[in-house]
Image (spheres, rainbow, N blue to C red):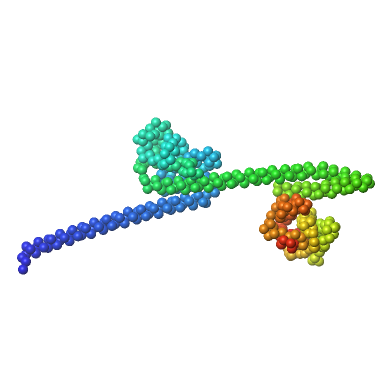
Length: 459
């Protein structure tokens, strides 16, 4: 049997082994906890960084202007990354013209606000970024020899600035701006944060490019609207001025016809009158369209006899249809009120243009005009006018464009059929002014049906 000394030695050895094992397990556990803590911290920091980048992207998408967007991003950088001041310096001349008002620095505290006036002007720092095309981190502004002779350094030091960071912002494949950050506390170069800031400057570059594109689009739209307004005003003026000499031509030609001229001269005079009347009709349409586009067209409200107004609008085309051997008819439903309240002149214009168009493009068959009531309620009468023809018809892919100014379904038709392509455009504009609608159903070779719906007041 082992003696007591051997037992004591074995016990000590076992305790020593057990303690060494405990130490190894404790060290392993501490190492595991340290690794877990580091991983958790890195995951937290990475998640925080991703949230920051996501928030900046969101700012870029929702901000209506560069000013509000930049301001929000700079404030976010100060609060999340613990810089005391942040600012942007734009280098692109064209961008500067549009975005210079947005180049405001922001400060995390009021007493540090004077740095804002200097942050956009540290020429040496910006030059350093441009020279290398890479970030510049100044851990200790006082001891950094790169900027020892620059006046702005002393000014920043007097305001309490200790560290600076500047990063290039790229868009259009070149450095267009510089992000500038300032801190009153000493900050050693932080490579993970520097990587994050580089990702943020990429986002800022996308934001600047998008805002500049928006500004260019706005500018182009304003220029186009100004040009359109100038064109409409020119058309309105020139159309108005053309009426006086054209009325003189018409008046003199009609006067000459009344003096019983010879057969040849009479034929010439009738041609002059016919041509002048067509010209006057075109001038009137151009003037009406220009006034509508320029916002000068006004609607008039007065009572009118519906049947009389419809007949005055359609009857001039009955003789033309007869000469073409095209059947022509119109009907007014019995439930159509005798009197209505509204702009009768515009109502007649719309019908005239649509019916004239139908007769012009119909060589065989018939043109019919039907007027009926859709509804009468609360003192309002919804009137429907349908103009059907068996003319050449319009392909589906051409139907939208025939309501454009100076357009026909086929440009070659202008050589065969007279007209400037204004009648339908003017009808649509007038219908819209009156709060109504105009619809088209058509098939090539089968004819067309124009449906006009307008609301008038009851008398």
